[in-house]
Amino acid sequence: MTRIDVTAAVSLVVLWSSGFIGAELGTAYASAHSLLAWRYLVAAVILVAWCWYRGLRPTWQAIRRHTIIGFFAQFLYLGALVTGVGLGVPAGTAALVAAVQPLVVAALSSRFLGEQFPMGRRIALVVGFAGVFLVVAGDLGGGAASWPVYLLPVAAMLALSCGTVLERRMATTEPIALAMCVQSVVSAVLFMAWSLLAGDAAPPVNSGFWTAVAWTVVLSTFGAYGTYLFVLRRSGATRVSTLLYLTPATTMVWAYLAFGDRITWLAVVGLAVTAVAVIEWKFLLRTVFPVTARGVSRPSRPVART
Image 1: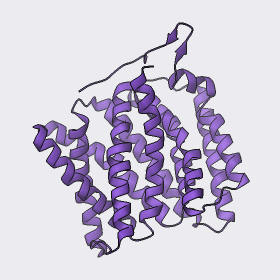
Image 2 (image 1 turned 180 degrees about the horizontal axis):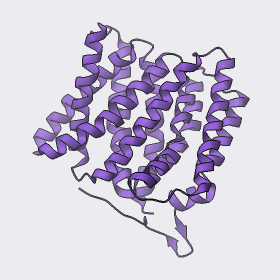
Image 3 (image 1 turned 135 degrees about the vertical axis):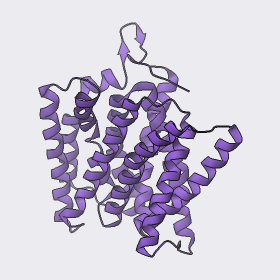
Image 4 (image 1 turned 45 degrees about the vertical axis):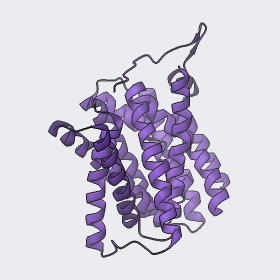
């Protein structure tokens, strides 16, 4: 694993965690779809200007592919996730639900990418959901959101899993900035249409809302999702999904410090159960931090593209 891979992996974990914090921060001032509409509008304007300056122009095929990927990995994923957080799902719990994604991606990859999904992984998938159930049960006991709301982070996780597999299946080769530009424009249009239909497209006039927009644009859109695409293209769907498991503990601590979100013992137990299911420590070490007796090894399937 090269220094670039290590830096990208660490950056992805930290930046991806910031998205859950930004969701809880922003929904205190506006609805989820309003926050996301202005987040993607600002991001789209910046990315369009950058791509125009750099001379990056998408083909119709690229527009079609990234419209589909953006619909799943941006619009459906964040629409469901941020709405769930806005309705009372703690940021740490939402991150833990997303941590089951590696197993879901592995299951989908076995069907659509031809990768193996042995019985051990199938059992791990069931155990992983059991760990998530423990955390959700602890939240419900503390008077958080009602149980149907917790289906939103689950739907978000499934949407991002589909988007991840689609990106690998379509074998996209466009520069990351151009891919993010198309996806951001698509998401901006969809979220703004949602806000217009809901009648709350006008942004709140306060600094807290725009701080949340800046937070999510810089750290979540450019930072987290840009790094996500980089690792996905360079190291594959399984590795990028496995890295996402490292975000729940970071998010829980961050949410505790920023918002006072409680960390129950049941949440800790659920996190541990999910750890056993998702990580399979030997698998994590082999997939995320591959070290051999001769030194640091390179990814088994390098797919870096520009």
